[in-house]
Length: 251
Image (spheres, rainbow, N blue to C red):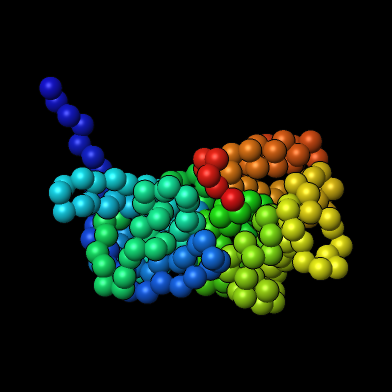
């Protein structure tokens, strides 16, 4: 049977590459950012993800997908991994890897949930828990390229201790507005009681329809569906709402 040829650029993204862990840092008690050197990395767009494959000495292998946290930076790729109880891969990546270890990465993957530097329209980012990871890549890419597109981030977490990239997000940046929302425990004297995302929360940050903004929503499936429904009810154009979701183990 004849087999269709895979275009060169696609074949490059589908190829497994050996990545060397060159550094790591804690983001929260349960999440770590891993810095990899990936020779021959083809580059990526903010919002894309990679597949990570682990192979044991007996030949057993398993793989998972993780969003890229970093802006494009040559052969350097950063992934932020949230520890999942009983998670086969996340447990190893957050607790078991050492600098110098080798893993396999494949990607980048994805072309819909991405932000490109040539976009000039306003952007609303809505993150639930570790859904902040690909949105952080967008913020970093905006900064790296000197984009003047105005960004707003609404970041929903369970408690203050669950906030990733806190120091970076609390550093003032022209054209970037960051707001936190807490669902279980809020800081002392916080003006909003802990509760799930509501329509008034989103109404306070959405861009007017005339702005033709693009909205990116990322988080657990229930959070994403709830946020998207609220955005549409507020009059946001469904065609300009892009969503990325993960399973029930997310933040």
